[in-house]
Image (cartoon, rainbow, N blue to C red; front, top):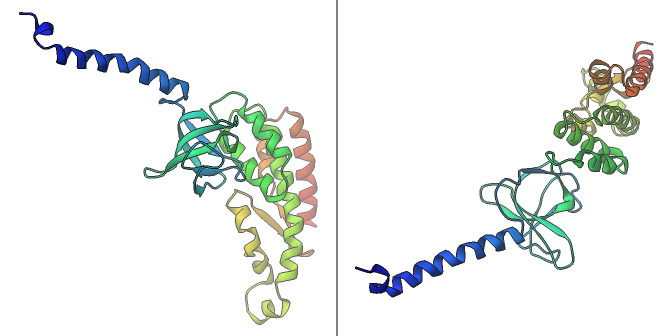
Length: 246
């Protein structure tokens, strides 16, 4: 008995379904959709707007904070040429992020791209992006330079923090309590966000000034002793030692 001739409608449905498979797959590839894109990390919060559609005028769902990891599930280029990634932020939160807001640590050249952004950054932004680099690229050949940059940015921040703390901490209020005055400085709220980036400060009690504790410089000497950055790191640690032991 000929099944196909007996059930022409069923055969038509089967053929139609099979013929649609390559069309759907082709459409997915055209948009760059599919598994295995991996993880991305937000490095430029100025661009990290999660949208409902891959378009700069698409509905804003939320802004993703710097340092946040997202799962990339696809990509598509908008009509104006901007590349968007389809991302999953949480189990319930998905949307589209502009590609330039992210780095993809597994992709070649992303460490150099982030370093360019680092060099153009200043103040706390430089510290925060350097921390992202150090966490995301543990084997990058650019790491010694970023460790040096991280420490220098932290020491530069210490200058401003010293000024701010001296201005905001009242001598009368500190004397009214039994707590040591230096403990007020080391508990100053302005250093909290730096602590969260792995920056620790030493305190010169005589001058009432913060200084970076030099951890990244010591890492350079320990892990990259023959690098040009190690020479610079030793000089910085020597200067720090003089300041803290006088």
